[in-house]
Image (cartoon, rainbow, N blue to C red; front, side):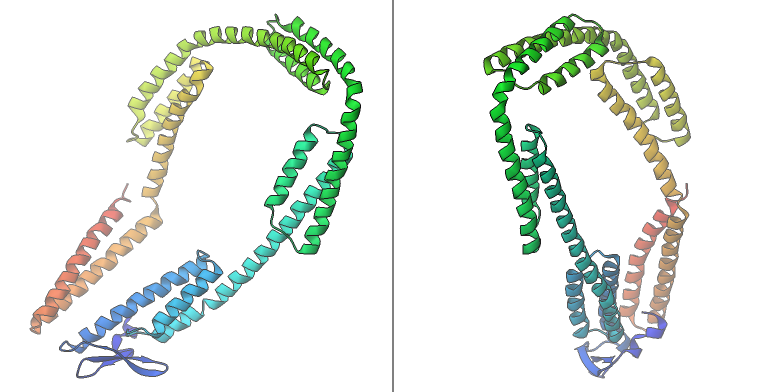
Length: 414
């Protein structure tokens, strides 16, 4: 409460210690503090006002920042308004009520935004359902007999997960979706009725694919042959189904040829990994050395130089076995993160705005301590030992806070 808002401007004390607060509606008693000086009686109730003012300030910040929903904000404002209206406190209660009233436009704006958001969400649902309908109608006229079933199932699951629209719109979209699904199902059944005629053609195609796969089984041209097997698999899937028993036998031959090639490839890769193990051991030793010299980061300049040297030596070592890549890279990233965090910490410690805030807080605490010490001296001079002790106790508390504030300010020194 500022000097212009001195307690006497908002309240008074009767001889019996009854304290009154002044509001726009007149005076009302807020309590009684007998046998104490008038200023102390007023101070008791002005501290209550200070607590209410803090509560209003916090609520203002939360409402204006959007931390509360419109309904939660309205409820909180109502609760705090009642607390202020009925408060047994001395201060500008009407001013607090005016500040609370000033939050109403913010709440109204939030409610309008929430309505707009609900409208936007409904529009998104409508767009999502229309998109599903369009895709379903496209599938219904296509010939994707394998993937189409799964896609229709996924579309149906997505549809069920979406909220309903208004009844007329939702029913119309569902009718189109359901019709497309029925059309697709009918055409698919007709397709499979014709499939028996196509299975012999599939058998011939798959026999050719098996022959090609078996011819490639002994290849050592790893890259191109891997691509060739991938192409053969694509053609296998596109060939359709041969008669059941024949299809299974052809698949076993095709898979055996493929497994032979990839087993040989794996053997060669394993041998190569053994050669690369020397590089892995070298990188482990390099990481051990780097971690010991860099971590924890105490000298950022030296750490940056050491990390650059680490990267140069790391690149020069060469490849490592695939199984070693992830754990080695994780340790390297940990060193990088430590250096980056040290840079970030240094920036925070030299942040001039944060330093200014810490120094300002310390200055205010020093001023408050001086004021309390002056009050104690005046109370001693007036023979009021109790008031003097209270002032000294408060000053002691402020000194503890000052020590913390000074420590915080000193943290920004380097």
